[in-house]
Length: 345
Image 1 (spheres, rainbow, N blue to C red):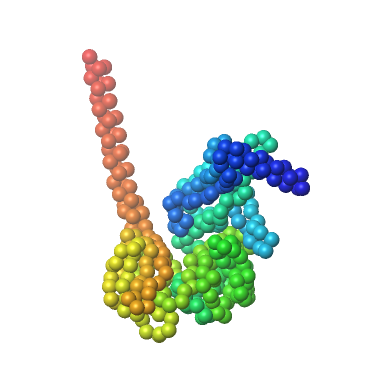
Image 2 (image 1 turned 60 degrees about the horizontal axis):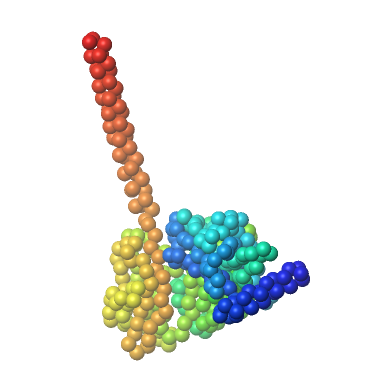
């Protein structure tokens, strides 16, 4: 281990000296990004892109997930199929809940190999239609005022205690809920008084380390947007309200989606029949109190719609089958007729 450290340090020094001679003083570093976005629904495609800044050619890339963060640093696990992203792009054509996690990349080249340091952390959050566990939040919203209590609980059908509430922040990485000045009892995490630095993504982690039902929680003083914790189903009603910390009444405010004003001077914004086009980032703004943080509203397809499509396909299938059989018989009769004519001649 000591020799490996010395060799890596020596190679880093050589690369730095080489860069200085060529007019560059930056040591090659890996930078990770995600496309098209880090919040996904099951079945969505996603690509992790790793690039080396300071030197762009001849690199082979490796891919890791963050398993834990502590005072002693981060712990990473090499992906079992890391080699398929060796050229710099790691693509998942159809994301599953199991792909939820925090990723990093690393690049190497030369003989002996010079390795860059680990890249920046890049989370990917996949929401499932029927996850095995639900993250229950009380009060039931994604934005919360500072200095109030907050409870998060992982609940499954068997009411087991095998789940743990985990939190992720860009600064601290992935942590146990109890690391954030909260108490964890069984599968429930309780904050007696939350602060802005408690803002992050919270999820339920299984005993095997898989993360389910991620929810982005924002802690803010002043104005917040009251929005649903879980994805809204197509056809359902969506209601948004604007709240202010120092009053119990609902504010009359303007509501925005993806930066565009959609309703003004109203105490609540209601979309009576939600569709996929209503998915996006929402926030509210009051002329005197200020504006709320943004919240992502996810819309999932109705199961009734899926069943209707499936039943329509199944209903058409018999007619398609009969049509194919008739066409086949007609072709056979025509061939037989031609053969009989040729025989007669």
